[in-house]
Image (tube, rainbow, N blue to C red):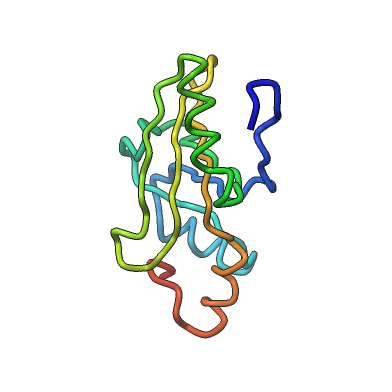
Length: 128
């Protein structure tokens, strides 16, 4: 990857929202069948913080991960390199970086489509 190459994201793979009433929020979103993070007020991975928006994640091909982390660091950004597999569910790696506007952006190698397949089979860790 060259410094002039765009980061090869495949799309937004997660949105996390802070919710004061998690039960009401779960009832509202349960029928949507999408991956949406509903959090109690807290500071999350990579410094994601409360308010209207906590952070968002974009899918990234695993083979591009190291080059993207290197590119962001070369441009002066602080990157948190997080290995989700340490939780025992093999969810890939994620790089968290704060954009110039203060938004935490996550570049995640996990194919979030796997969440729906696991949920249908009753196997998705952390889903309910």
